[in-house]
Image 1: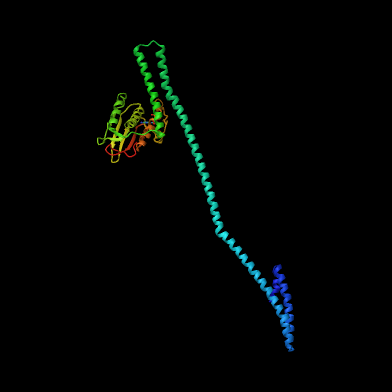
Image 2 (image 1 turned 90 degrees about the horizontal axis):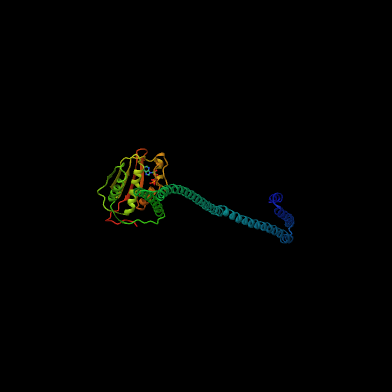
Length: 366
Ligand code: ADP
């Protein structure tokens, strides 16, 4: 024990060395008292031995023990406190810090998502602005060309009528030209307004019994009067009964497709109109043998003001509104429209509408 106490005195901290010194001093007293006690016992002086034991050896031993016990208790308390601290640290490291880290990470992730979304929205807005700006310049260029041409005609012919001495037949001819140009302007304005109303959802379709075959036949008959180079052939499905639809708008679809088929076959050639009734759909196809459309443009031609600029199309009048109008009407009828084509050999425009015969009720038709 003395070796241990000596070791504590040498290697322990300040408090340990202090305690070891006190214990050693008490130990010296104890050894001295014990020696005297043994001597008294040896000479048979039991009264002295009892006195030494009670007043010297015993108290010194108790003092020594109480110091050691007190130090032990203090150490135990310090160890317990350290353990509690360690526990708290471990709890922080193992439980709380991952939770705080996870919350922090979630906040950062949320922030990143918000930033990403706002960035995305900004990109989207920028794209829309760019698109609007492109549409605006296309609109200006279409308007300046398409409006100017008939206006120039109206201006020129009316000036001639005003300034020249014309015969009645000449007057009639010029008035006819003016009328043609005025109609062209009116059609252009109507198309622009129609498309705008359809795209903004401000146009609703009628739900009335419609005979698609009759619409196709009547439109073809009108075009035959002015398209001698384009024999119009009909192949109409007689199983087609009255449909529920909007007669005027379906006429507009057939008119625009047939007009294009003739316009974009400048060297003439037959145009075929075909209807077919299937289980749940009705299909209208318009086939021409004209200039055709390159595969990369088959989608784009349905966009507003989209005109294909080639040497062949340059001389052909148009506004780029016919097909977007067709697409809007067909989509409002819950149908679809697409084109297939072979450049230089002709095009086929397909319109597929859901079969809603007049006897059954049209779902969702306005
Ligand atoms: P446009 O008034 O110019 O005819 P459309 O929207 O009807 O406007 O057509 C868009 C473009 O699609 C046309 O300018 C033309 O280049 C092309 N197009 C449409 N129909 C045909 C067709 N039958 N054959 C070849 N090209 C066509």
